[in-house]
Length: 168
Ligand code: HEC
Image (tube, rainbow, N blue to C red; front, side, top):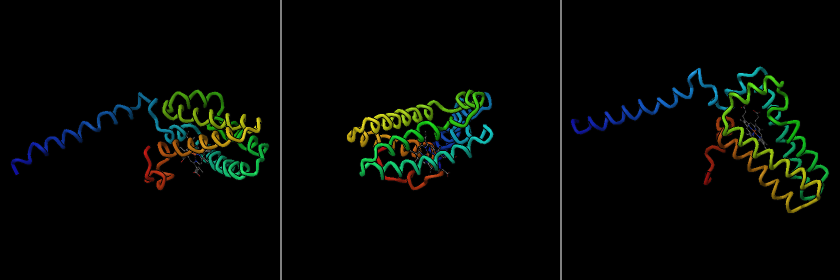
């Protein structure tokens, strides 16, 4: 039992110290580390709007997957443009809310969202150019961005994805 004492002290210290960064980042003075859902919840109506936009993006991405093999570039461009503009996370925010949102959301999340829009925007362009190869590439990158963001930021909503065997 005596031999175990140092181990127990180490465990107690490790647990105590592991809380310190959490406390600091969750402190009321520093809102810049808020997770997306906490940030959405702070702005009236935002969480519901985002969920709605996500559901619509899901429908559009499925339509795109069906339109690609039939070469329906018009439908691809149209649905991708909806995801890029109409269903964007900030789309329904007032300018004031947007300022607040950008000041409280983590940079990681913003960058993830920006990447997503880069690919969806490129999907719109490649479909307009009727460039099949690039359309396939940009579709893959767009879909991967949905997955990447959910993997990092929507684990509770998608627990099966969080348990997936990946190299993430
Ligand atoms: C930048 C991050 C990000 C990207 C990119 C993203 N999502 Fe999401 N998505 C989220 C988050 C965060 C939630 C959880 C929202 C909540 O619970 O309030 C979510 C939730 C959802 C939901 C569930 C909505 C509900 O009913 O609660 C669906 C469906 C969805 N996303 C589809 C998609 C699809 C399809 C794409 C790609 C075309 C996509 N998302 C891209 C962050 C993202």
